[in-house]
Amino acid sequence: MGQKIHPTGFRLAVTRNWNSRWYANNNDFAGMLAEDIKVRDYLRTKLKNAAVSRVMIERPAKNARITIYSARPGVVIGKKGEDIEALKRELATRLGVPVAVNIEEVRKPEVDAKLIADSITQQLEKRIMFRRAMKRAMQNAMRLGAQGIKIMSAGRLNGIEIARTEWYREGRVPLHTLRADIDYGFSEAKTTYGVIGVKVWVYKGDTLGQRDAPSLDSTPRPEGEERRGPRGPRRDGDRRPGGGAPGRGGPRGPGGGGGGGGRTMSGSTNVAPADG
Image (cartoon, rainbow, N blue to C red; front, side, top):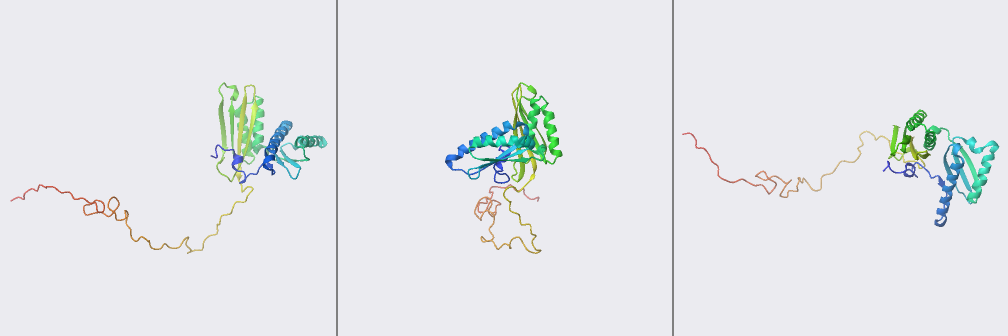
């Protein structure tokens, strides 16, 4: 199951948290969720050159707080903060509530799955060989501290007529381990031959996540103390296999068969007379 399911959804409330953090009743939930999707699409289009990794949306008490994780925060802020002020006004118009925008810098974009996928798709759109782009991204990620990475590309690779899928992996990527910190990203390259999809999994090591996992009791037991008490006598006495019943497994009869079911062979036997 870990191979097929979305790695982030599989680990929600275990080692990952939601990108949209708010509460709503049944009537408003669908509309607010659609607003979040539109806001994210708008930000990814407008900030295409800002290397946006993810967008977190919070809605406290008739307000909205949007946190943008970017590898190039200067592009988002703009000269003297002009761009971010215009962005706040546009987001406030779309959401209908006052919006506060925070910018968080991504320190290592080489190990961020979304930014790796975006980088590969940009290279594919510039007609760079997909194998070269994938292997270069894997080398950079492993060099900067990733414990494992897997990259998959699917589509008309290098313009071939029949679409195919190719993937490369380096290190460990334990998709089925819940405590594993797996970062997943996806992007699409729109080439002249068609769309090429790129998926990236980055393993950054094990983590306890949002909820602290219970610690195992590793206190050594004193010498002489057993794990459990000695076993008492059996209640059923010295019962032999088969329960003494006739048939297979019971006590053997005089003829060598099962208990009570032993058979003796009868018949004539020719005995040679003794020499005279």
